[in-house]
Length: 284
Ligand SMILES: [Ca+2]
Ligand SMILES: [Ca+2]
Ligand SMILES: [Ca+2]
Image 1 (tube, rainbow, N blue to C red):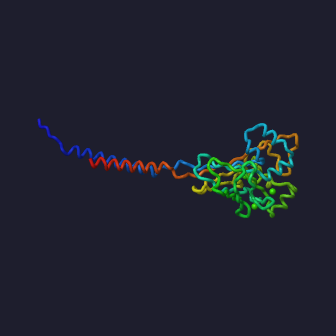
Image 2: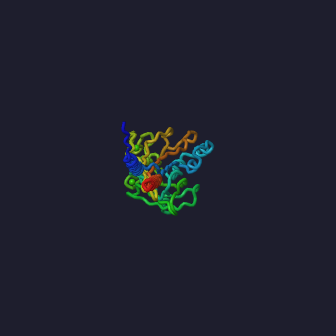
Image 3: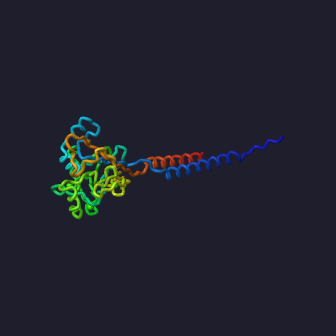
């Protein structure tokens, strides 16, 4: 029985091992580069006719206090609702711009006395807002200065809805001198378009919003649905009798944009360390 010693075997095994390590390293690099980014910049927009509802969304005592106004006052509040824009704490970039479309384009975002289109709320002082419109007043743009709205921060501001001049006579024929309710302009409560008399349940004529993160760019858009509202018969000239209940509600939109995953940088560093270990092993 002959015993043949094999001098070439350790070399073959080492080469196979190095090739396997290289293939694994390349596969790892591809996984790191091809992996979808999972980190996101996220925003939430809430709208309500009363700023204090946004400040105290779950407080029953506030709900009772806010609800028992008179019908005329509620009509005016619903024409000049408050928006709360929140940059979620999980985001990594500030929000520098907010966009909202009008929904029903027979209306527009109109100025307050003094000319501004968005007025900073009293509950979030200190922000520098600059407002303008696009598309003949049918899209409002609110820029947030001084570095923008940081992750974890929120800002509240008030907007004002007006009737387009071309629709003013038709509006007045039905609703007189009253002001349009944001729940009939940005969307149609219970799918009821009160200006056409139709019930569609269609979000094609509803408002949508997005924000710009800097850095990060424009987020996804979100659109209002034709929201279900229990006391949906009170709007514009249809004032609530004082004895009736009509809670102050909040309606929300949300969006996001993915940001480059910082882990990708870590993965590339790991790849570098693996390559260095391979070189060291070769030099032994
Ligand atoms: Ca318009
Ligand atoms: Ca108005
Ligand atoms: Ca609609």
